[in-house]
Structures are given as structure tokens and as C-alpha cells.
Image (cartoon, rainbow, N blue to C red; front, side):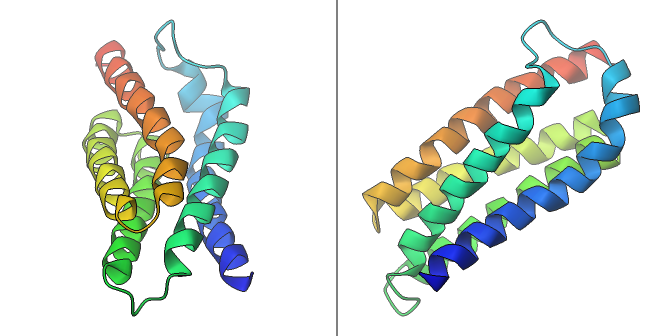
Length: 154
């Protein structure tokens, strides 16, 4: 049970770090940039990300509980942590540095890292693989949104 709590807390902390960059930019910069018609309302992001980070934490727990000595688990966890760091980096670039183009590069790398995470999780736990599914779907949408924001705000 402690591994489950730690896994969820680590993921939620990643979200909280990203939110530190986000909160400062929402009232000014982000409110004033041009957005596409399909941009979700601001209030939707916090509950979606909180849910996604919880699902990621549960998925990581399902892998971690197999034991770091088990073949493939260390690799899968390292890739998982890489995508978590890329997630934080995206927030830092997009909201902290206000670099829509730089954030686009990172979110594409993030998408690839999530896919890599899913591939490594698949062989270890079907449930963990499926729990990452909503995350890659949301990030796929975020890639499209990031592209649209870049185009509209050149």
C-alpha cells in the first residue's frame, strides 16, 4: 500500500510543480494569447490533470510492485520517470518561459516518451498499459492545441 501512495504522490507532485509555472501565466499572458475555437475552458485542466496524474501513479505502482529486480521493471520505471520530467518541462517552457515553439518540441518528445512507457508497461501489466491510455489521448489533443497556439500567435 505504501508503494501505491508514493507512486500517486510523486505523480501529483509533478503536476503541482507544473502548476507553479501555469498559475503565474494564466491571468495575464495565457488569457491574452489567441486561442483556437477548440481550446477547452480553463477550469477543465485542473480536474483532467489531477485525474491523469492519479491514473499514472496507479500504473507506476502496478509496475513497481512487481519488484525492481524483475526483468524490465527498472527500465519501465526509468522511462516512466523520463516522461514525468518531460511533462514538467513542457509546463516550464510553455507557461514559465512562454515559449510555445519550445514547448511544442518538448510535447512531441513527451508524446513519444508516453508511447515508449506504454510499450514497456504492456509486457509487464495490461492494467498499467490501459491506465496510461487516457494520458496519451489527452497529450495527443494537447499536441494539436500546442500547434494551433503556435500558428495563431506567430
